Image (cartoon, rainbow, N blue to C red):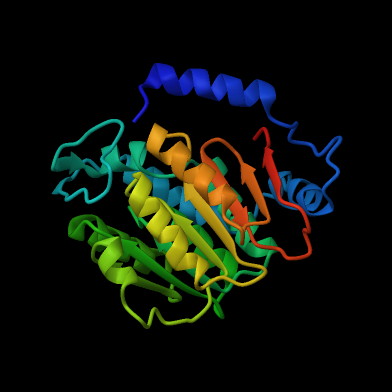
Length: 266
C-alpha cells in the first residue's frame, strides 16, 4: 500500500485534474445526471439520523475484540485485538461516502445488493434503508467478532432485509446460489489486492445486467489496486467508470456507445 505521503500526493493530483463536481462542461448525459441527481443531492434524508447515531455509539465503544483480517490489512493497525472505537474510526466509510452509496442505491432503485466487507455494518445499514423492505442485501464479513457486532447493529436499527455471512469472500462467492441471480449493486470493500479484486469483478460481471453498478473501495490504495482499476476500466463490458478517488464506480449501460472514463471532484 502507498504511504500517507504518497496517497496525499495522489489525492492532490486527482483534485487538480478531475472534472468539477457540479457538472459544468460535462457532455455525457448519463454522467451529468449522476452528478446533478446523485452526487449533488443535498437532501438530509431522515434515514441518516439513526445510522449516524449508531456510528457515534460505536466511536465511543472501547470494548476490545479479537479480529481476523482476511484482506490486505489495515492502513492504521494490524493487531488482532482492537477496540471497537478504533475499528469505527479507521475502517468505516465516512458519512460523506456512506450517504453517497445510500443516494446511489435510492436513485437507481437497486434491490439486489451485495457487500463484500461488512465491518460494523454502517454502509450495510445505509444500503438497507435506501433499498426499502422489498430489497435484499447480502453482506459478507471475514471476522466472526466483527460480523457478530454488525448483526447486533442491524437488530438495533430494526433492519430485516439484510442477510449476513461470516466467511472468506472467495468461499462465499463460489456458492452457486447467492439468493439472487442478478446483482443491481455490489460494494467491494476488502482484500485490496490485484488478483482477488479482479476475481470479484469477474464474478459480479457474470451476475450483472445493463443497469448494474459495481463500487470498488480504495481504488488508489496501492499500486495493485490502481492496476486492478485500470484492468476493470478496460474490460469490454464496461461502458462507463467514475473515479471519486476513494471509490470507483463501474457501469455497463449499453446506451453508452463509446467508453467513458471520468475522474470527478467530490
